[in-house]
Image (tube, rainbow over all chains, first blue to last red; front, side, top):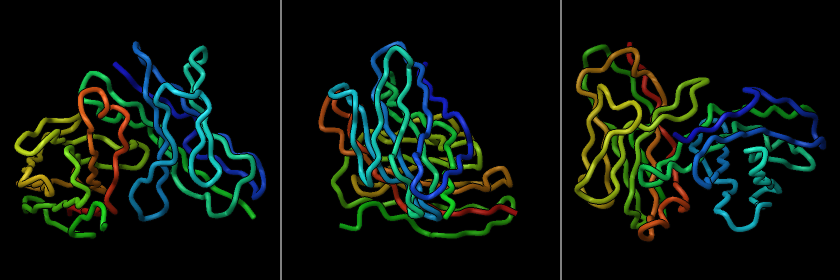
Length: 114
Length: 118
């Protein structure tokens, strides 16, 4: 069965600092991986996705993620945090066995300090 | 395009009451989903519908029923609400361009319904 694990339920960074949110996956087949962002009191919005093309994926708002098969990881990064990046971030894997339904991690809440 | 819309935005129920959460999408998507979000649990799939006329159970279907009324609308019903169903409910939809493509297509989410069961 496929799964994702997000390390750290809360991450706090200073404005202008590097953002690193960790996601590790478990999958017996090449995975399709997604990062979604949820701003307070809103639904989820796609940041980026890995679909087996380029291993470095660029998304919206300056975020990017690198697929590393050897480390079974898909960590999300942004070089310089903005206050507007404060949100909850979810990593998800597409379940190849059931019509591609998404299996979500438990989420990481990002706080940005001025 | 309004995208995915959900009604109501907020609801308070007493234990044992019933209600239906409504979801509609105007993107001509084939697949629709209902999730619940609880603190520290991420999103868990309740039911999904891969196409009009079909529905399937997800990870946490107990206590819920769904109806795919037409291609646009997918409703979630709580027949006898329980405090354990206090949660934020999200509807989502996905296009599914054909066999194999659905795994990479993006799911689009509605704004959510906050449900409290007393």
